[in-house]
Figure 1 (tube, rainbow, N blue to C red):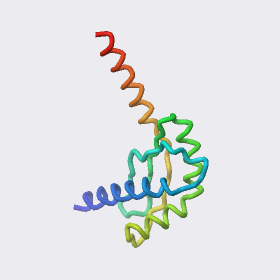
Figure 2: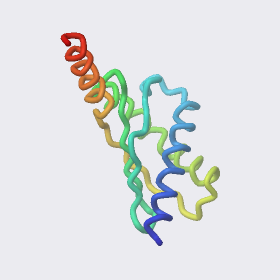
Figure 3: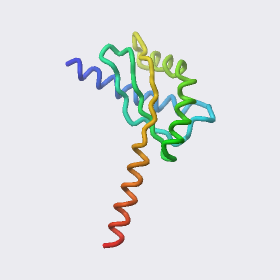
Figure 4: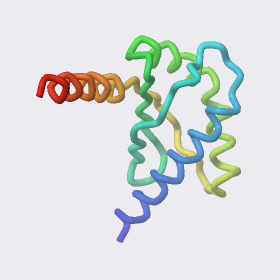
Amino acid sequence: MAGFHIDRISEDIKREIISIMRELKDPRISDMLTVIKVDVSGDLSYAKVYISAIEGIEAAKSSIKGLESAGGYIRKQLGTRLHLRKSPELKFIADDSIEKGMDLFEKIKEISNEN
């Protein structure tokens, strides 16, 4: 039963972080960012947030720096929006899932054009 609670909190955190990222004005943060996955620890103390950008892994890495500097603000907003007793400490990790997905899409497109 505890697994369902953690999964629900993870999805709530993911949804709210996406919403908060839209409000941030830091020029280092790309407009084409998305949160791929959020892993929350069992005691809700820590959360790993996987971030990906359409522009590629380098854009995601530079955006991570902006998100880390706004980490306190994001954490406070999470606590107030989700009414959490203890807001998890956030660790942002760059991910290249979107870039890989776009490459795969292009390869499928090329194969279908050949046929």
